[in-house]
Image (tube, rainbow, N blue to C red; front, side, top):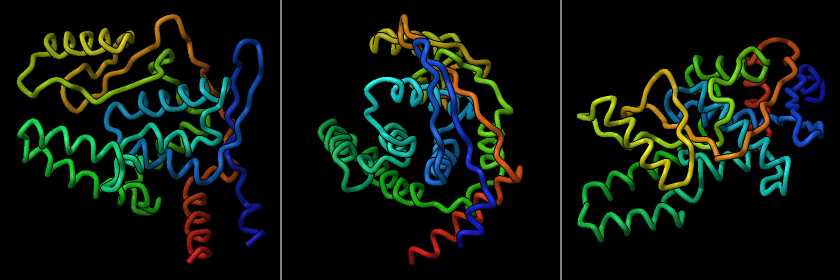
Amino acid sequence: MRALENLVSLPVMTWTHNGRKLRYNLSLVDIEDFTRAVWREGEPRLAVAHTLLQRFACLYSGKRPYETFSEFLRAYVQPINPRWFPTGELHKKEVARLVKAGKTNEAKEEQARAARRVEYSTTPMSSIPVAYRDLVSQILSGLTRSPVPTAQHFSESKASSTDTQEVAERKAYTWGAQKKLDVLAVAEGYKPGINWFFAIPGAVPPNPTFSATDMRSYALLVLLGLVLLARKK
């Protein structure tokens, strides 16, 4: 087992914050949860991925509420966040809100989503479509650039399917103003199925860079994950 572990050098994330050079060594668990997040958080996925990295680097540069990238992802990314699982307090609060508002069908849909989140959070890498694994591999090999370099937050679009692009954009700016965040434009627009991206006024997050992984193959990381999982059983 030791020999297999030595076949892989996991990526190292580096950045500068307030004149300090910082680094974070990604673990296999970090990479797996990052892949799950990119898979489930919607379009445009390159912007989503870089926003998550930028937000984590910013937090890690300061008080470090999360010691690992995985911990951050499972607190920020709803599809793998235990607080949104069937027993989680955020899920229960949302169901109660919907029931109180008389939205019975929506409450049932949220309960179904909560069950799926448990599945998403443990989906093995080999079961995630290769396109998402390849994107993560490219990002962590330093082959991509952030299309939203000032973003620290994103949210699913609140626009309806009947909204024009102009109406959807106004809704994004209204929502951002309510949260005291600046809206960032992306080529994909603001309509349903496209995430909205936001910057914190006056704050510029670090833009991490990455060392390339040895062996050049994300598939090897997947294989190692399967071996580690088998050892736990």
